[in-house]
Image: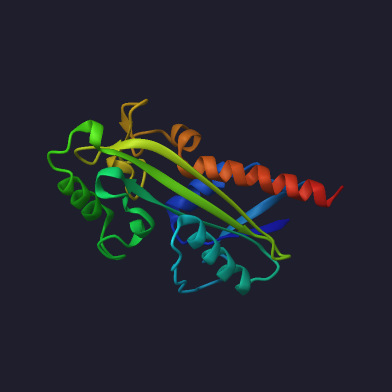
Length: 208
């Protein structure tokens, strides 16, 4: 069975990843998807890129260097709020400090948008996925979901900034959507499905 290491320790993210990639097959066989911790890899990765794609590649390459035989996937994702000049952007996880709770981060962003009307609260989640293969080849994908910033946290199903990110078509935050609804439209769902197709196509060509 092909081993895939996903460069994250986020349990909520790993749950989404395993659900979305559940039917991924490489060389006709199912894959085992491991977090860094499950793979026994502990790294302090300096995400010093200037874009989501660059940071995803940096993470994937760092983990690949620690386990040369594995396929490595990494993502870099974040929230861009147009009124705040696309903050927090690539610094989403580090916004107000890495140890600051997302409840505090969310509250701060809502406070910064006090008095800002709906039409100016536009925002998007961005997700970049990078894949490093055992031969060193690098694949990338990027996807977004558009929405607006709400006026309070709503929902318990998501994590991170999900409770303040409203999806107008559903009239709900991404933390109020069911797992199936969220995975169908989310930035991470879109990017992972695109990466899945790219990986499967590449492995099919290798075996031709």
